Amino acid sequence: MGRTASASAPAGPTLAVVAREAGVSVPTASKVVNGRDDVAPETRRRVTEALDRLGYVRRPRFDAAKAPRLIDLVVHSLDSSWSGAVLHGVEQAAHDAGLDVVVSAGLARSRSGRPERGWLDKLTARGSAGVLFNLAELTEPQYAWLTQHRIPFVMIDPAHEPPPGVVSVGAANWQGGVTATQHLLGLGHERIAVVAGHRRTMCSSARIAGYRSALASAGLRHRPEYVRHAGFDEAVARGRMRELLDLPEPPTAVVVCSDRMARGVYDAAAERGLRIPDDISVVGFDDLPEARWASPPLTTVRQPISEMAATALRLLVRMMAGDRPESTRTELSTRLVERSSTAALR
Image 1 (tube, rainbow, N blue to C red):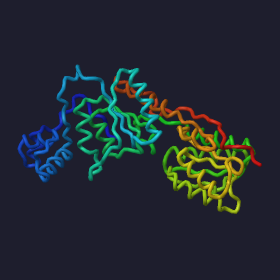
Image 2 (image 1 turned 180 degrees about the horizontal axis):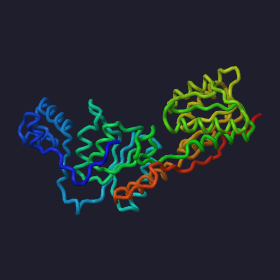
Image 3 (image 1 turned 135 degrees about the vertical axis):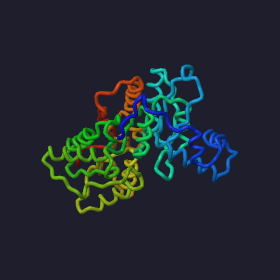
Image 4 (image 1 turned 120 degrees about the vertical axis):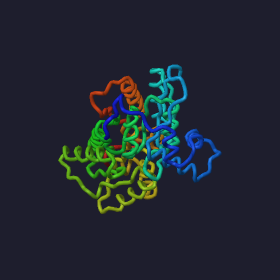
């Protein structure tokens, strides 16, 4: 990650420099920066490209001393139980800290890979003191932009390992994989499969590693054909479960790396006339509300999603005050929640 600019670093380019670069007048460049509609599309394109090329940052037009303390929360989407749990955790912690939160869904990118100017201009214009990201990942230009402009930020459950120095909060995924597998081993199952998420994501890799470790501790050989990747997609998980059931020795139990994918596993079992847990035991991961609504209710590994979000906000508050956390990675414990989808091997 690039070095943070010092407090004495020179200011960025002026609007006059941007206007000269784009071949337009300063008032025209100002219209583009301020989102005015009365600018020709080609002119807007030239000015926008000049803004990106020169790294112009729109300055706030308000009295910062009188403005509310704002932070931004950027989530992947707003239509999932996971995002709802993140919002709940951030809301509670922000209230305790006396902060207001602006929520955005997704972070669009321009063709160059940079964050879209509109979102960045809004971030600087409203004077946000920091950002929480609950996204799959950021691009290198996005990391660089945040660092260049000295905006503190924290990642919540990043999909991939962030660059050195980036602060993140996640769950103890390896231990969760161990716990889920040990639960099934304790019920007498030995033919235990796993339906995992994406191949290269941190959480999925850690859960598979925990699963393998638990099998090895029980003296059982790891069977590669029992590991299937479904990319956290319910429909794909249904197909992967069908493949497992077609094996010469199908599993008697399965660890599924998300509650959402567990719905697909349930469907595949029902298609084959198998009853859960009489014919096959299923353990999920997350403990979202739908785990309780499943039929039968899903045994699952609970991720403390709201607590992860609240912890991320508290770390961000410390960083906004100039304090750096001792460790860039914080992991919160997972635990097994037993319901009705697992039973002793018949």
